[in-house]
Length: 186
Image 1 (cartoon, rainbow, N blue to C red):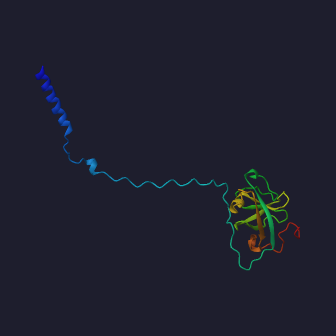
Image 2 (cartoon, helix red, strand yellow; image 1 turned 90 degrees about the vertical axis):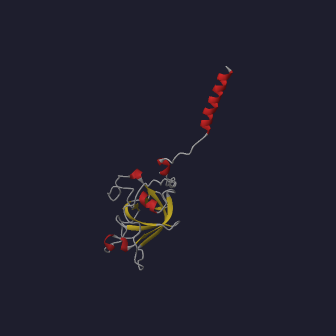
Image 3 (cartoon, one colour; image 1 turned 45 degrees about the vertical axis):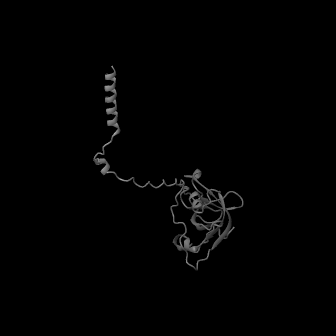
């Protein structure tokens, strides 16, 4: 019995010794084809702010240096947006908040105005298509697209300067007419 256990221990030791030795093997094909890891991809772009309206007209075309406004007014402007979409304006057109339009109490429909936000200097050209504003101490209501161009949509109102130039009017002028719905400013 002693002899059998000795033989068993010897066989066990030999088999364990074989596990402990490692012979280097030839490099495998997968090791030869190893590629270093690619550089990390750039971080994802930050999410963009949703755009509610895209202006359909250029913001402010350049004027000749000699141009002077035939109408100028300074005061508060507000805007009206998608809630009024599709409704008829006082001029008979359908309101589209993506157009650069405005409501003024006295200026003739079709008059083009340059509106400048006095807090940031941004300007936009709008066309009078409606009557308003219907809130005292405000001089102009503009569309959402115009409010976005002036960066005033978050506050809802802004102090603005409104100017009308003959060079901005359809056909380059008003053909001798005033831009007011009557003969004189009110």
